[in-house]
Length: 221
Image 1 (cartoon, rainbow, N blue to C red):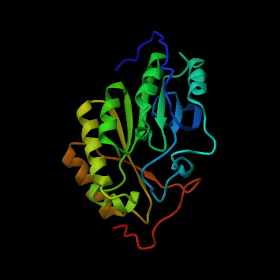
Image 2: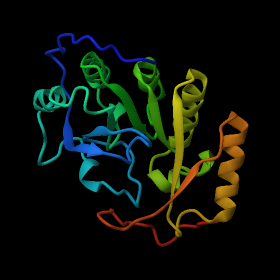
Image 3: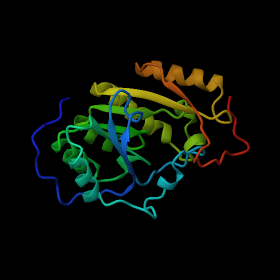
Image 4: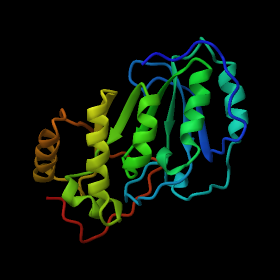
């Protein structure tokens, strides 16, 4: 998908709760120079969350969306794209309008998501150029990672939508040794194969800035 290069007025009514902004990133969209907008709020409570300050629906230090747009305007033709990360961006109703505004500035758009809201993800898929999809565990075992019943069903449905869309996608899985052992990773690989997906990229858990709250009875098998 090719972003428009002709500027259009940004929707004035967009409301987006933003908990952070990285003005230049080389890792949030592999191979691209991007700015990363961190959306506030997440419906899941993963024990190893690397951005725990973004979990609440409202944060203590929030950036105004018009200010972020104004900054992005100064980076036109300097950055390749903009990534919406979180938290979970699809939690917010204003995401589609925000993406439209960024595309109108001439940027390609990427999204980091774990897929908790398949219907909302479906609405923004036609606006995206790339997706970083976080696969937490074998789908039947999501509950012990996210703390939310049925979360694996949502993730499976979302990933199926992404695969059917043809949007470029990077699958990645964070491995905490107390949560995912090799047998679980093997089951995860089988789940992905059943959907026709490629292998997930394994990321080792890093405790810097993370919310470490692992239930003592967790079985990592």
